[in-house]
Length: 294
Ligand code: E4P
Image 1 (tube, rainbow, N blue to C red):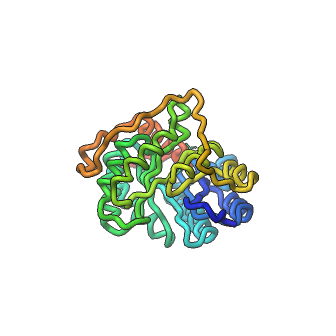
Image 2 (image 1 turned 90 degrees about the vertical axis):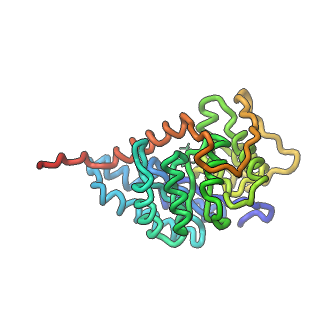
Image 3 (image 1 turned 120 degrees about the vertical axis):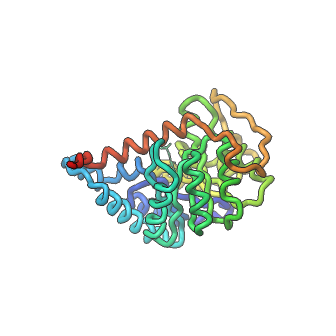
């Protein structure tokens, strides 16, 4: 059963519907799910096919992804399911938008994930104008979150998520949870049209601190939700303290939200690395492209 005091929505971060079924039954609720190319490459059926040496054609992998997403949609009725466009560093906004239109039509409750890059933001702006729901992924900085806010001005509440990645900042010695705190503080000066989805969650401490900070949504892997459930789904009280250990603090910056999105410095090394990793994992599923004979 959903804890009475729980205000945030809880999503599962996974490409495996079996995990959705188990965690939904175990917790007694689930508000949605996030997927990405890496998580789809870890789907047990996809792995089995790869082990048998059966790679997917470009069309077949999209059909496979669609099948997974349709199943997830049935498992979290009314909840959001995030579906990610394929984008490497060369992918243009119009290509992302075309994929988004297709993916958005797969299920009734999709949020389409775009990278928080210039091309991704351009595509997201068009997508929001066309009435689609979006989730801006691979966000690592306050500037990127400010650009998401600016690119999606006028969107309805619930239409736009921004996903700051905590664990990947921690991995390189920075306190990823500071980015969540900073973005929430910065967004407090805005109109509330972008919801903060705490992502790249690695531990129950990340989850608890995100709840304490007042994040709108948390997506967490199976093991973290299981650990939270095992402890009886605690909600942190006022005395809860997050221990960042030796992680380097990320200071708050005074950033106004009324600029054009193009004016924010949105570059971040981890966004580029993240796109490279997603693209590699996706390509590993694919048959090598046949050379065209003229
Ligand atoms: C969610 O939408 C993200 O894709 C996910 O949380 C990334 O997590 P990772 O850093 O553990 O890959």
